[in-house]
Image (cartoon, rainbow, N blue to C red; front, side, top):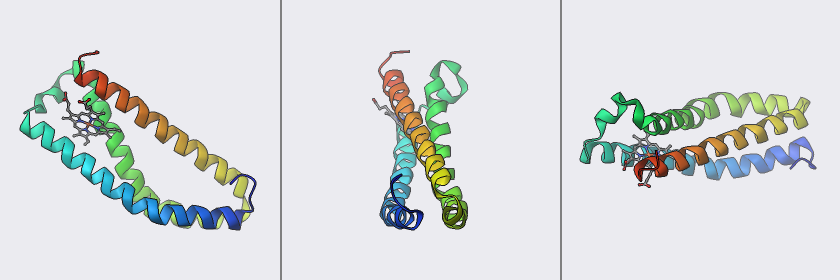
Length: 123
Ligand code: HEM
């Protein structure tokens, strides 16, 4: 996308976003429901009061980040601000977005590692 004109990558970004956005929102809700189900059925609530289960807090923290991005930031800010800015300063906006996505991906991978490790006695 870095090689393309702002109008062109914005259009492609929108096409991807329009399909991916609803899938991501549904998935984030399923993560919440399955997490709450596990907390309830295995009665794991007291883990949140013990610091040795730090990876539980990390999971909820990253979930809150995803929820804020997908349900608040994306619909309210990205859609409108991005469109205005992209016309004026496309490379800067695109590079910032790439870094934002890399940061989100890195934090997801870190949480997956921490949660699998924590659930299976690594820590
Ligand atoms: C409100 C949000 C969340 C809640 C309430 C929640 C809750 C839980 C609970 C209760 C477990 C089982 C712990 C155990 O077996 O010891 C678990 C495991 C796990 N969670 Fe979450 N979680 C949430 C968000 C997330 C997110 C955002 C991710 C990934 C990005 C994630 C990835 C995992 C993984 C990989 C496991 C380990 C499964 C295994 O190997 O047994 N969770 N979660």
